[in-house]
Amino acid sequence: MPRHDRDEPVPRQPQPPRAAAHRDRAVGHREGAAGAYARDAGGRDVAGRGRGEARGRGAIRRTVPADGSRLGRADHRAPRGHPRRRGRRGGGGAVRFDGRVAVVTGAAAGFGLAVSTRLTAEGAKVVMVDRAAEQLEKAAAGLAGALPVVADVSVESEVDGYVAKAVEAHGKIDLFFNNAGIEGRMAPMTELAVEDFDRVWAVNARGVFMGLRAVLKVMKQHKSGAIVNTASMAAIRGAATFSPYVAAKHAVAGLTRCAALEGAPFGIRVNAVAPGHIDTRMARDLTAQINPDDPDGVFERTSASVPLGRYGTAEEVANLAVWLLSEEASYVSGATHLIDGALNA
Ligand SMILES: NC(=O)c1ccc[n+]([C@@H]2O[C@H](COP(=O)([O-])OP(=O)(O)OC[C@H]3O[C@@H](n4cnc5c(N)ncnc54)[C@H](O)[C@@H]3O)[C@@H](O)[C@H]2O)c1
Image (tube, rainbow, N blue to C red):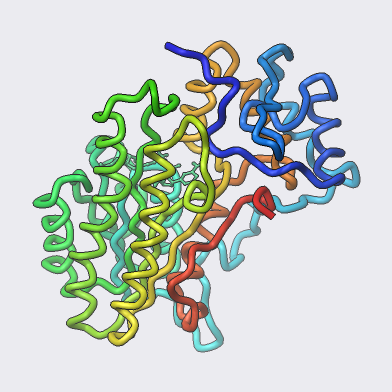
Protein backbone atom coordinates (compact mmCIF):
# COMPACT_ATOMS: atom_id res chain seq x y z
CA MET A 1 0.00 0.00 0.00
CA PRO A 2 1.43 3.40 -0.92
CA ARG A 3 2.50 5.73 1.87
CA HIS A 4 0.91 9.16 1.86
CA ASP A 5 2.75 11.05 4.57
CA ARG A 6 3.29 13.74 1.98
CA ASP A 7 -0.38 14.24 1.41
CA GLU A 8 -3.20 14.94 3.72
CA PRO A 9 -6.93 14.41 3.99
CA VAL A 10 -7.49 18.10 4.68
CA PRO A 11 -4.54 20.45 4.37
CA ARG A 12 -4.38 23.44 6.64
CA GLN A 13 -3.38 27.07 6.52
CA PRO A 14 -0.15 28.45 8.01
CA GLN A 15 -0.57 28.75 11.75
CA PRO A 16 -0.89 31.79 13.98
CA PRO A 17 1.79 32.26 16.66
CA ARG A 18 -0.35 30.89 19.52
CA ALA A 19 -0.79 27.59 17.73
CA ALA A 20 2.94 27.39 17.29
CA ALA A 21 3.31 27.52 21.06
CA HIS A 22 1.05 24.50 21.42
CA ARG A 23 2.97 22.72 18.71
CA ASP A 24 6.34 23.34 20.23
CA ARG A 25 5.27 21.93 23.55
CA ALA A 26 3.59 18.94 22.01
CA VAL A 27 6.00 17.68 19.41
CA GLY A 28 9.00 19.96 19.26
CA HIS A 29 10.47 21.83 16.31
CA ARG A 30 11.99 18.75 14.76
CA GLU A 31 8.58 17.54 13.59
CA GLY A 32 8.10 20.60 11.44
CA ALA A 33 4.69 22.18 11.17
CA ALA A 34 1.38 20.46 11.39
CA GLY A 35 2.18 16.82 11.19
CA ALA A 36 1.19 14.69 8.26
CA TYR A 37 -1.89 16.75 7.44
CA ALA A 38 -0.02 19.93 6.64
CA ARG A 39 1.18 21.81 3.66
CA ASP A 40 2.39 25.36 3.39
CA ALA A 41 0.72 28.28 1.66
CA GLY A 42 2.49 27.51 -1.58
CA GLY A 43 0.96 24.06 -1.61
CA ARG A 44 4.20 22.31 -0.68
CA ASP A 45 4.02 19.58 1.88
CA VAL A 46 5.43 20.56 5.26
CA ALA A 47 4.36 17.41 7.01
CA GLY A 48 6.46 15.47 9.40
CA ARG A 49 7.97 12.44 7.74
CA GLY A 50 7.35 10.02 10.54
CA ARG A 51 10.85 10.65 11.94
CA GLY A 52 9.63 11.44 15.42
CA GLU A 53 9.24 8.78 18.03
CA ALA A 54 5.69 7.60 18.65
CA ARG A 55 4.51 9.42 21.71
CA GLY A 56 1.01 8.08 22.24
CA ARG A 57 -1.88 10.14 23.53
CA GLY A 58 -0.07 11.39 26.61
CA ALA A 59 1.68 14.06 24.61
CA ILE A 60 -1.61 15.48 23.43
CA ARG A 61 -2.54 16.32 26.99
CA ARG A 62 0.47 18.59 27.21
CA THR A 63 -1.16 20.82 24.64
CA VAL A 64 -3.59 22.02 27.32
CA PRO A 65 -2.46 25.50 28.34
CA ALA A 66 0.15 25.66 31.08
CA ASP A 67 -2.28 27.44 33.41
CA GLY A 68 -4.32 24.24 33.43
CA SER A 69 -7.45 25.87 31.97
CA ARG A 70 -9.61 23.58 29.86
CA LEU A 71 -9.34 25.65 26.71
CA GLY A 72 -11.94 24.47 24.22
CA ARG A 73 -12.34 21.22 26.11
CA ALA A 74 -15.67 19.56 26.76
CA ASP A 75 -16.49 19.21 30.43
CA HIS A 76 -17.12 15.52 30.79
CA ARG A 77 -17.43 15.80 34.54
CA ALA A 78 -20.75 17.57 34.72
CA PRO A 79 -22.10 17.11 38.25
CA ARG A 80 -25.16 15.01 39.01
CA GLY A 81 -28.24 17.04 38.21
CA HIS A 82 -26.41 19.22 35.66
CA PRO A 83 -28.52 19.78 32.52
CA ARG A 84 -26.05 17.75 30.45
CA ARG A 85 -26.75 14.72 32.62
CA ARG A 86 -30.49 14.97 33.12
CA GLY A 87 -31.70 16.73 29.99
CA ARG A 88 -32.28 20.44 29.64
CA ARG A 89 -35.33 21.67 31.48
CA GLY A 90 -36.66 25.13 30.94
CA GLY A 91 -38.38 27.21 33.63
CA GLY A 92 -41.66 25.33 33.09
CA GLY A 93 -39.99 21.95 33.73
CA ALA A 94 -40.32 20.74 30.09
CA VAL A 95 -37.45 18.76 28.59
CA ARG A 96 -36.20 20.47 25.43
CA PHE A 97 -37.16 17.68 23.00
CA ASP A 98 -40.08 16.19 24.94
CA GLY A 99 -42.50 14.48 22.54
CA ARG A 100 -40.16 14.94 19.57
CA VAL A 101 -39.33 12.11 17.21
CA ALA A 102 -35.77 12.02 15.90
CA VAL A 103 -34.14 9.87 13.22
CA VAL A 104 -30.35 9.54 13.41
CA THR A 105 -28.25 7.70 10.81
CA GLY A 106 -24.82 6.29 11.59
CA ALA A 107 -26.21 5.97 15.12
CA ALA A 108 -24.17 2.99 16.32
CA ALA A 109 -20.97 4.97 16.88
CA GLY A 110 -19.24 8.33 16.77
CA PHE A 111 -21.31 11.47 16.18
CA GLY A 112 -24.52 9.53 15.56
CA LEU A 113 -24.35 7.80 18.93
CA ALA A 114 -23.40 11.04 20.71
CA VAL A 115 -26.38 12.88 19.17
CA SER A 116 -28.73 9.95 19.91
CA THR A 117 -27.57 10.00 23.53
CA ARG A 118 -28.12 13.75 23.91
CA LEU A 119 -31.53 13.72 22.22
CA THR A 120 -32.69 10.82 24.39
CA ALA A 121 -31.47 12.58 27.55
CA GLU A 122 -33.46 15.62 26.51
CA GLY A 123 -36.73 13.77 25.98
CA ALA A 124 -36.79 12.72 22.30
CA LYS A 125 -37.75 9.31 20.98
CA VAL A 126 -34.85 8.34 18.75
CA VAL A 127 -34.96 6.01 15.75
CA MET A 128 -31.35 4.85 15.45
CA VAL A 129 -30.28 3.76 11.96
CA ASP A 130 -27.04 1.96 11.12
CA ARG A 131 -25.85 -0.90 8.95
CA ALA A 132 -23.70 -2.38 11.76
CA ALA A 133 -26.44 -4.52 13.29
CA GLU A 134 -24.69 -5.83 16.38
CA GLN A 135 -23.15 -2.52 17.36
CA LEU A 136 -26.47 -0.79 16.79
CA GLU A 137 -28.34 -3.21 19.05
CA LYS A 138 -25.84 -2.56 21.84
CA ALA A 139 -25.98 1.20 21.38
CA ALA A 140 -29.78 1.32 21.34
CA ALA A 141 -30.06 -0.94 24.39
CA GLY A 142 -28.40 1.80 26.43
CA LEU A 143 -30.88 4.50 25.43
CA ALA A 144 -34.41 4.62 26.83
CA GLY A 145 -37.10 4.35 24.15
CA ALA A 146 -34.66 4.10 21.25
CA LEU A 147 -35.75 2.10 18.21
CA PRO A 148 -32.87 0.46 16.31
CA VAL A 149 -33.36 0.04 12.56
CA VAL A 150 -30.69 -1.80 10.59
CA ALA A 151 -30.35 -0.17 7.17
CA ASP A 152 -27.72 0.80 4.63
CA VAL A 153 -28.16 4.48 3.73
CA SER A 154 -26.74 3.87 0.26
CA VAL A 155 -29.64 1.59 -0.71
CA GLU A 156 -32.78 3.43 -1.82
CA SER A 157 -35.28 0.83 -0.54
CA GLU A 158 -33.54 0.74 2.85
CA VAL A 159 -33.63 4.53 3.17
CA ASP A 160 -37.35 4.61 2.36
CA GLY A 161 -37.62 1.65 4.76
CA TYR A 162 -36.07 3.37 7.81
CA VAL A 163 -38.24 6.44 7.25
CA ALA A 164 -41.35 4.26 6.95
CA LYS A 165 -40.43 2.44 10.17
CA ALA A 166 -40.03 5.72 12.03
CA VAL A 167 -43.43 6.95 10.83
CA GLU A 168 -45.03 3.61 11.58
CA ALA A 169 -43.67 3.65 15.14
CA HIS A 170 -44.22 7.31 16.00
CA GLY A 171 -46.45 8.89 13.34
CA LYS A 172 -44.05 11.70 12.43
CA ILE A 173 -40.43 12.84 12.21
CA ASP A 174 -39.49 16.14 13.87
CA LEU A 175 -35.71 15.92 13.83
CA PHE A 176 -33.28 14.28 11.41
CA PHE A 177 -29.52 13.87 11.87
CA ASN A 178 -28.45 12.73 8.39
CA ASN A 179 -25.00 11.66 9.40
CA ALA A 180 -23.82 8.22 8.25
CA GLY A 181 -20.61 8.38 6.27
CA ILE A 182 -17.43 6.56 5.35
CA GLU A 183 -13.91 7.81 4.73
CA GLY A 184 -12.97 5.54 1.84
CA ARG A 185 -9.45 5.05 0.59
CA MET A 186 -6.90 7.84 0.67
CA ALA A 187 -4.79 8.04 -2.47
CA PRO A 188 -4.03 10.46 -5.29
CA MET A 189 -6.70 10.46 -8.02
CA THR A 190 -4.23 8.80 -10.36
CA GLU A 191 -4.13 5.78 -8.04
CA LEU A 192 -7.86 5.49 -7.38
CA ALA A 193 -10.28 3.16 -9.10
CA VAL A 194 -13.65 4.52 -10.15
CA GLU A 195 -15.12 2.05 -7.64
CA ASP A 196 -13.29 3.89 -4.83
CA PHE A 197 -15.08 7.07 -5.84
CA ASP A 198 -18.45 5.34 -6.29
CA ARG A 199 -18.32 3.69 -2.87
CA VAL A 200 -17.80 6.96 -1.01
CA TRP A 201 -20.25 8.85 -3.20
CA ALA A 202 -22.96 6.23 -2.67
CA VAL A 203 -22.93 6.62 1.10
CA ASN A 204 -21.82 10.22 1.68
CA ALA A 205 -23.68 12.01 -1.13
CA ARG A 206 -26.41 9.76 -2.59
CA GLY A 207 -27.23 8.47 0.91
CA VAL A 208 -27.62 12.01 2.21
CA PHE A 209 -29.78 12.97 -0.79
CA MET A 210 -32.03 9.93 -0.42
CA GLY A 211 -32.40 10.57 3.33
CA LEU A 212 -33.33 14.21 2.72
CA ARG A 213 -35.82 13.23 0.03
CA ALA A 214 -37.62 10.67 2.17
CA VAL A 215 -37.66 12.70 5.39
CA LEU A 216 -38.68 15.96 3.68
CA LYS A 217 -41.76 14.20 2.30
CA VAL A 218 -42.84 13.42 5.87
CA MET A 219 -41.89 16.79 7.33
CA LYS A 220 -43.67 18.71 4.56
CA GLN A 221 -46.94 16.99 5.53
CA HIS A 222 -46.51 18.18 9.12
CA LYS A 223 -45.21 21.61 8.06
CA SER A 224 -42.31 21.60 10.50
CA GLY A 225 -38.99 19.94 11.16
CA ALA A 226 -35.28 20.44 11.66
CA ILE A 227 -32.53 18.62 9.79
CA VAL A 228 -28.78 18.53 10.27
CA ASN A 229 -26.57 16.89 7.65
CA THR A 230 -23.01 15.90 8.49
CA ALA A 231 -20.62 17.57 6.08
CA SER A 232 -16.97 18.14 7.03
CA MET A 233 -14.32 20.78 6.66
CA ALA A 234 -13.73 18.76 3.49
CA ALA A 235 -16.87 20.56 2.27
CA ILE A 236 -15.01 23.86 2.10
CA ARG A 237 -11.52 22.90 0.95
CA GLY A 238 -9.59 20.33 -1.04
CA ALA A 239 -7.06 17.65 -0.16
CA ALA A 240 -4.61 15.97 -2.51
CA THR A 241 -5.37 12.40 -1.51
CA PHE A 242 -9.02 12.57 -0.45
CA SER A 243 -10.90 13.47 -3.62
CA PRO A 244 -13.94 11.14 -3.34
CA TYR A 245 -14.59 12.25 0.24
CA VAL A 246 -14.03 15.94 -0.54
CA ALA A 247 -16.33 15.78 -3.56
CA ALA A 248 -19.07 14.04 -1.57
CA LYS A 249 -18.84 16.49 1.34
CA HIS A 250 -19.02 19.46 -1.06
CA ALA A 251 -22.19 17.80 -2.33
CA VAL A 252 -23.56 17.67 1.21
CA ALA A 253 -23.06 21.43 1.56
CA GLY A 254 -24.91 21.98 -1.72
CA LEU A 255 -27.74 19.63 -0.77
CA THR A 256 -28.04 21.47 2.55
CA ARG A 257 -28.57 24.79 0.78
CA CYS A 258 -31.12 23.32 -1.64
CA ALA A 259 -33.06 21.50 1.08
CA ALA A 260 -33.14 24.64 3.24
CA LEU A 261 -34.70 26.61 0.37
CA GLU A 262 -37.11 23.81 -0.44
CA GLY A 263 -38.09 23.31 3.20
CA ALA A 264 -38.38 26.94 4.27
CA PRO A 265 -41.98 27.49 3.03
CA PHE A 266 -42.94 24.46 5.12
CA GLY A 267 -41.25 25.68 8.30
CA ILE A 268 -38.43 23.16 7.89
CA ARG A 269 -34.88 24.22 8.71
CA VAL A 270 -31.85 22.47 7.22
CA ASN A 271 -28.23 22.97 8.27
CA ALA A 272 -24.97 21.06 8.11
CA VAL A 273 -22.17 20.60 10.59
CA ALA A 274 -18.64 20.69 9.20
CA PRO A 275 -16.31 19.06 11.72
CA GLY A 276 -12.54 19.27 11.51
CA HIS A 277 -10.43 16.57 13.18
CA ILE A 278 -12.64 14.70 15.65
CA ASP A 279 -11.39 11.65 17.55
CA THR A 280 -13.60 8.78 16.38
CA ARG A 281 -12.97 5.45 14.67
CA MET A 282 -12.93 7.27 11.34
CA ALA A 283 -10.20 9.68 12.39
CA ARG A 284 -8.07 6.81 13.72
CA ASP A 285 -8.45 4.93 10.45
CA LEU A 286 -7.23 7.98 8.55
CA THR A 287 -4.11 8.27 10.69
CA ALA A 288 -3.40 4.61 9.96
CA GLN A 289 -3.93 5.13 6.22
CA ILE A 290 -1.56 8.11 6.20
CA ASN A 291 1.22 6.22 7.97
CA PRO A 292 0.50 2.61 8.93
CA ASP A 293 3.86 2.45 10.72
CA ASP A 294 3.18 5.39 13.00
CA PRO A 295 -0.52 6.29 13.31
CA ASP A 296 0.04 7.75 16.79
CA GLY A 297 2.68 10.07 15.37
CA VAL A 298 0.22 11.24 12.72
CA PHE A 299 -2.40 11.75 15.42
CA GLU A 300 0.01 13.83 17.48
CA ARG A 301 1.12 16.03 14.64
CA THR A 302 -2.46 16.52 13.53
CA SER A 303 -3.44 17.50 17.08
CA ALA A 304 -0.60 20.00 17.18
CA SER A 305 -1.71 21.49 13.86
CA VAL A 306 -5.04 22.56 15.33
CA PRO A 307 -4.97 26.02 16.94
CA LEU A 308 -6.88 24.64 19.95
CA GLY A 309 -4.17 21.99 20.19
CA ARG A 310 -6.20 18.79 20.01
CA TYR A 311 -8.81 16.72 18.21
CA GLY A 312 -12.42 17.49 19.07
CA THR A 313 -14.79 14.94 20.60
CA ALA A 314 -17.99 13.43 19.27
CA GLU A 315 -19.80 15.05 22.21
CA GLU A 316 -18.62 18.49 21.10
CA VAL A 317 -20.00 17.87 17.61
CA ALA A 318 -23.24 16.67 19.22
CA ASN A 319 -23.46 19.94 21.17
CA LEU A 320 -23.55 21.87 17.89
CA ALA A 321 -25.82 19.44 16.03
CA VAL A 322 -28.34 19.26 18.86
CA TRP A 323 -28.40 23.04 19.16
CA LEU A 324 -29.08 23.31 15.42
CA LEU A 325 -31.93 20.82 15.85
CA SER A 326 -33.40 22.81 18.75
CA GLU A 327 -35.79 25.74 18.77
CA GLU A 328 -32.92 27.93 19.97
CA ALA A 329 -31.73 27.84 16.35
CA SER A 330 -35.14 28.86 14.98
CA TYR A 331 -33.69 31.44 12.54
CA VAL A 332 -30.68 29.38 11.48
CA SER A 333 -31.06 27.55 8.17
CA GLY A 334 -29.18 26.85 4.96
CA ALA A 335 -25.69 27.09 6.44
CA THR A 336 -22.73 24.76 6.91
CA HIS A 337 -21.27 25.30 10.36
CA LEU A 338 -17.57 24.65 10.97
CA ILE A 339 -16.53 23.04 14.24
CA ASP A 340 -12.76 22.67 13.92
CA GLY A 341 -10.86 24.24 16.82
CA ALA A 342 -10.09 27.27 14.61
CA LEU A 343 -8.23 25.14 12.04
CA ASN A 344 -9.84 26.99 9.14
CA ALA A 345 -9.86 30.41 10.78
N1 LIG B 1 -14.38 11.95 12.69
C1 LIG B 1 -14.05 13.01 11.97
O1 LIG B 1 -12.96 13.56 12.12
C2 LIG B 1 -15.05 13.57 10.99
C3 LIG B 1 -14.80 14.87 10.50
C4 LIG B 1 -15.70 15.42 9.62
C5 LIG B 1 -16.82 14.73 9.22
N2 LIG B 1 -17.04 13.47 9.69
C6 LIG B 1 -18.27 12.81 9.24
O2 LIG B 1 -19.06 12.53 10.38
C7 LIG B 1 -19.92 11.43 10.10
C8 LIG B 1 -19.82 10.43 11.22
O3 LIG B 1 -18.48 10.00 11.30
P1 LIG B 1 -17.83 9.40 12.63
O4 LIG B 1 -16.54 10.09 12.81
O5 LIG B 1 -18.83 9.39 13.72
O6 LIG B 1 -17.50 7.94 12.09
P2 LIG B 1 -17.72 6.48 12.70
O7 LIG B 1 -17.09 5.57 11.75
O8 LIG B 1 -17.33 6.47 14.13
O9 LIG B 1 -19.32 6.29 12.66
C9 LIG B 1 -20.01 6.18 11.44
C10 LIG B 1 -21.21 5.28 11.63
O10 LIG B 1 -21.92 5.28 10.39
C11 LIG B 1 -22.24 3.92 10.06
N3 LIG B 1 -22.34 3.75 8.61
C12 LIG B 1 -21.33 3.84 7.70
N4 LIG B 1 -21.81 3.61 6.48
C13 LIG B 1 -23.13 3.35 6.61
C14 LIG B 1 -24.16 3.02 5.70
N5 LIG B 1 -23.92 2.89 4.39
N6 LIG B 1 -25.42 2.85 6.16
C15 LIG B 1 -25.67 2.97 7.49
N7 LIG B 1 -24.74 3.26 8.40
C16 LIG B 1 -23.47 3.45 7.96
C17 LIG B 1 -21.11 3.09 10.65
O11 LIG B 1 -21.52 1.74 10.85
C18 LIG B 1 -20.83 3.84 11.96
O12 LIG B 1 -21.63 3.35 13.02
C19 LIG B 1 -19.50 10.92 8.73
O13 LIG B 1 -20.39 11.43 7.76
C20 LIG B 1 -18.13 11.50 8.54
O14 LIG B 1 -17.80 11.64 7.19
C21 LIG B 1 -16.19 12.89 10.56
